[in-house]
Image 1 (cartoon, one colour):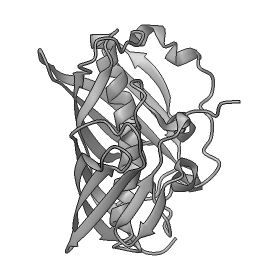
Image 2 (cartoon, one colour; image 1 turned 180 degrees about the vertical axis):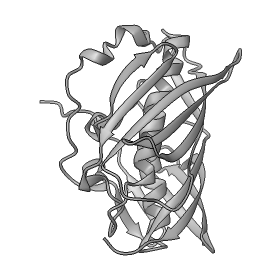
Image 3 (cartoon, one colour; image 1 turned 120 degrees about the vertical axis):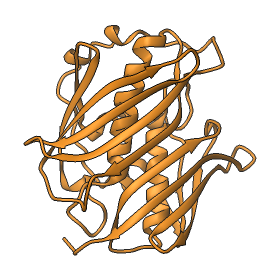
Length: 255
């Protein structure tokens, strides 16, 4: 029996509100950055990729959206909260590139982070998906709960200080059958955090250069103060670069 998609297990319930896509999720301990009680920035990135990607799909369906860039920036030092809300909207729909913003707040409406993402249609016109209105977002039932730490669920492992690997798995693919771009954020985060134990990420920015088709997606980070530069390569795909990323870390008190 096939498992639920890892992205669904992050628990973001979605609903359309005019031209916007809104989401909400409960924060559970399995979403925390290791050693803290703060939600992982990579989870915010995965949610942003989901919200933004679905908004773009609504415009270009049946073409499949491909993420070009994705960034998440926290407004201030992270705080503890039990629920998060996301509000996504299209900022610009150009002829070839579509830009989306996603704002995150706590359940009480306090600002948490902002995300921006850009997309294009997959060059392969044989790849198709249904329009957003046919995805029955409101009728998918309650979002499943993440039952194990995010990295463990995604099978993302730290190979060495500064190196993390994310395998290709059927429950972690995107619409084009390649490793989900939101999950690659986890590999970036794990590589960076392995060099800054006891920290969380204040920012995470990724530029996607090509799909990770075979895997594992291997992230290698180099640290410069609190700023890390990260390369992600498709190890099974001739070790080609699939993502270039930067992150900024912040030490936090233990949970």
